[in-house]
Amino acid sequence: MRRLLSPVVVRKGDLIAMFFIDPSSHDIGRSHSSAPASFTPSVRWGIGIDADDFRLSPTASSDRFSFHLLQPGSALLPGYWQLRSAIFCEEQHLFEDSDRDELDDQAYPISAIHHGLSHGGQVVGVVRIVERHPRVWYGGRLGVHHAFRRHNQIGKGLIWKAVSTAHGWGCDRFLATVQIQNVRFFQRLHWCSIEELEIRGIRHHLMQADLSYYQPSRERRPCARAVA
Image (cartoon, rainbow, N blue to C red; front, top):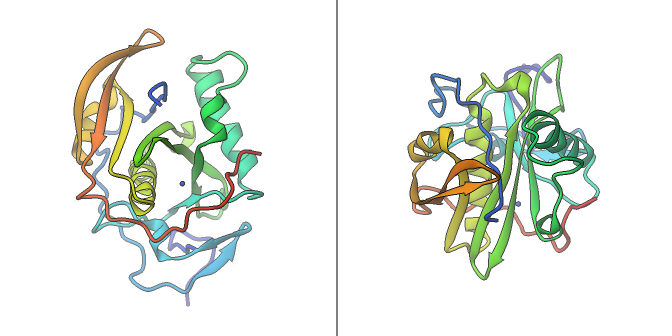
């Protein structure tokens, strides 16, 4: 009998974007865990959860984190905004009062949720996706809660969710600006570097995802965006 709220999991969419992944994890991007092959969809913390929400790659899944496109009115939205502010304003000091900008009016927020006895339902990772031009999407504001950065699954799962979601919505090209220390991580996840940039005094690479690797998601595109 499956124990709910345990590490044996359950499940159920800018150039000026900043990507943040903890560079200290030696095994970053190399997950060997997998969620149950079959799983009964359920509703937890006000969101639907199914097996696909644990996906990290075409062949791997997480055993303790799930990844969700946040719908308008989602109970997870406050945690999404709070974590973004904690990372990009309080920790990295990239913004003074708020990291929100005009792209958030067009973007789709995605969050990573922890499934565990002590932090069940906590938002532990964030990213946003936005269609800047027809069929050209950008990922941005990728971040992981400081207490969970040793879990390399979170960044990997957020990137998979972001790119595969946009791909399912007709994306022909998916781009992101990536901090220099994270370029190799993205390369291992089937991204290539296009050019080097400097944003807010920090070196970045403009990178592009290989869409042949990121299977299109079945996630339906919301009629409205979750910006509250």
